[in-house]
Length: 82
Image 1 (cartoon, one colour):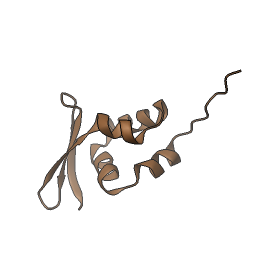
Image 2: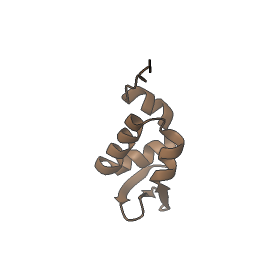
Image 3: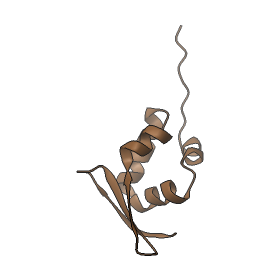
């Protein structure tokens, strides 16, 4: 399904996406971050998409591979404690 419009509602912390078959999907952003993001850098990347391109965010979550995307766009090197 193609997504042709989406917007972020900060009161509910959800992205609402209208699909080409006229159905509406509500994506719980907190639940997605808890499942997909392993660190603050990945959460930050998802937050950037939510605020700046909610349509791309909805497409990524519904039709893409969020783990592959997050591995490609974030650089995270855990610091070793001595």
